[in-house]
Image (cartoon, rainbow, N blue to C red; front, side, top):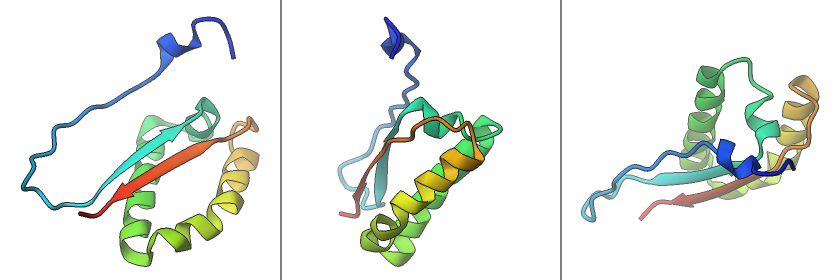
Amino acid sequence: SKENAWRKAATSLRRKEADDDTPYLYLISTDGFANSYVSDVEYQKTCRDYYNMIGQHGFDAVKDNLGKWLKETSELGCGDDVTLVLAYFDK
């Protein structure tokens, strides 16, 4: 990583009301993941896809396939290493 690379980190923070029981997902990734998509729109669509897949098929189904999907994302994208952290909360 380059010196002061943290200054280029992109973040988004949203307020969640205590009585809102909508599931939510924290997704943290290296730039290799985001750079593997042709646009921010495609990257954000993929993030929503992970959220939806976990909600529909469960976290284990995503976990069991994640390594393969990330390898494919890198190979078809920018070729950089890809690291992804997912934290899904349904209560």
